[in-house]
Image 1 (cartoon, rainbow, N blue to C red):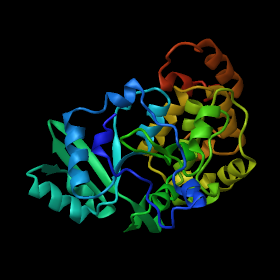
Image 2: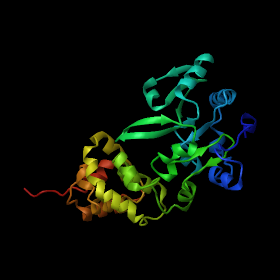
Image 3: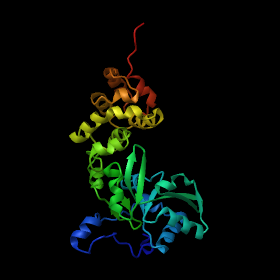
Length: 306
């Protein structure tokens, strides 16, 4: 589908066309052609891809949207990554008479444009030079693998070409397919210290991806326990966004017990001596329903006698 849009579509190689080089860079041969994937190709996206082809810059679907598409789910939001710099994208859009919106992300490489009544956010491939929790000083690159290396989890570090080719540098597809583990890209400790909220994101995606709870990398659990205190510096708003998704996801009982065992609880506003017995009863009673996050959360707090 849309193969004519990418007649030059090849892996970006920095080495010769040897078999080893192809194995390193062109990591997944199967092409995605699902209805969810095909439904993305409305007039806006077609125009966008044609524009980038004309300018000889690669454009791919990135991150969470790839994860959703491989899970058979049409993503609510689609992020794009490109080899084009923000300056180049602005020049191209201005020359084509395309309106750009919300320039807040430009210094981090993100440009938002509106085509055919649709909004598209495209981020230049980048490397984190220095990180200060959420905010990083970035350097732009044309190396797709380098960009993948800076992402949080293997299941979120993949790219999808518009011919359906999956670019998977850290076996994220296997993690998604096997439904056994959630893994950080690189060392868990390093990823967590870049943004301590990664601890809660790990729990959230574990509940979303893993089929049967219980299997975790020991290195990951150690990194979480060692860095749990860092969550105390995260805003309540950001913490609650992740926590409520954990509470309404799968394996809530397992994850809340793990949060307690790893001493994460007191740093996210939960009691250190949480009433896990009462929580077990409530989570069992609401299993199969869609309880409000606060309903589940309230059971963790012990009622004090007057």
